[in-house]
Length: 299
Image (cartoon, rainbow, N blue to C red; front, side, top):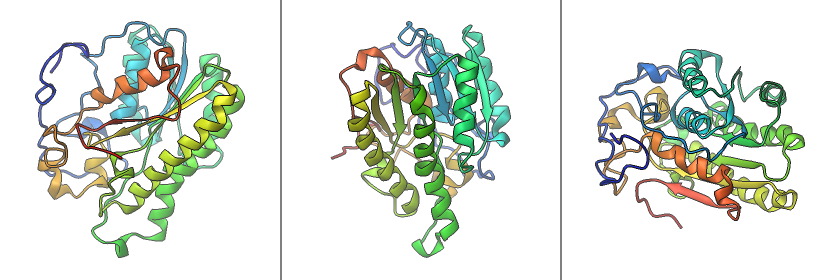
């Protein structure tokens, strides 16, 4: 493991190939029950003040990529509100502890993105708790594998789009009145937006929609001085995998057979991309999809 994100070395061996044993949890699952537990950068992320004074709302901030982003933002000087499902409270407590250890404000706002009223409540509570809002990061997502298209029910398809696409749409609308010039919105697509996994058709389609929606929003909102960009992760070891996101029998080869890097990514490796897109270092970056996928070539 690197001592910090700036340590130089061979990227293929920077983090271990997890090769997890087959394991399952009920959705949404808990990161703390995974084997091995994903690395959120707790011991390695070193901030340099790149987001000093920022006020960020991060969905899916209890674990995985969202949790790593929350920790990174706090260590870069941002106050952070995290959204997560109530069932994920114990994971959220871990991330909240990491944020508060930096001396930054941490706001916990549990709820369900499928609830149409939650987006407004989420934004209102984030603004009240942080004293404003200038960075919106959407990471939360729903993913369920099915061996055949005939196994995907209408309810599953609708739930996937409700969380991944409609939830994002409602959140952006609720946040916009609070976002001033210089604010940023960063969304989360996936490698599957370009190369859909045949057993995750609804998830892949929703990620393609997020990518497209975000690019359209970027053109609309840049006129207000608000930058919208996208991060598209490749295979990353998070609680989505053991809680029904992929076929459990494939977990020992997760990431190693897909990525030219020969391993899955860790959430800690995704966080710097989100920091960059929220920071003023990326002031001329708008409508970009930043692929962090271990070498999986995209169009």
